[in-house]
Length: 339
Image (spheres, rainbow, N blue to C red):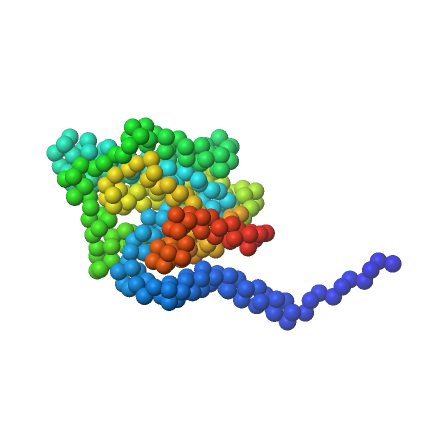
């Protein structure tokens, strides 16, 4: 005789399981915030200078560059992709912008116009590089890891070639004119922090309030199902890499006036920091789920770790990158099987 059908779970049991799952999701989502709060408490206890306003502004300003890139990286990872070239891309953009401004200043007779055009060039170059990545991945059918690993070497090699193995430096007059983009402030907060805030808010609105944002998450969850649902997967992926390239361009135009130069070491390991910020912020490494808010918290959390290490000398500052690498591995281990 066929086995008797098993009774379905009671409605109360299903509701209880759903409630428990909801609470678990909320706790997991608050994980980066809880970690950041605990780190701030630990930093205050270890060194009184940590809790000062000046130090907080310093942390946020240094976070801005990686944080802006991490916002774009969040879209790429949610869609199921990856970009290992953002640091090298930033270095080449910085070098190109410096060469352009140094040429455009005398050529146009207007240093201000040269700086403005150079800033615009940074964003355009970022978009073009992102477009190249998107086309190679979608139309060329090459894995994102391979494409961006290749361009990682290409971008940095071209910067080294343009700099002849040394550094490209802004002319003094142009450097002084460009400096307020990094060193200027509004209402006591430095310009890069405001730009970071604007990029994060716009990124959050795009991800959560637009059809494009929903498509990005759908593709990361199940690309084949997204295709069956008439989503233009290739177009969405291309736009995602273009968006990341624009974020790299914005971060670079803010970074150039900080030192006024670009060298083969510019942007070194920025890809590690950006990916770490996204993953620590709770975005699933396999794609399909993530948030801009979590990414912002993740970027600040990593900067706070570096700041605490610098202030307390618990371990050598040369091991900061190692700490970030361990963080990526640990979080990826905890995300096993999560989709």
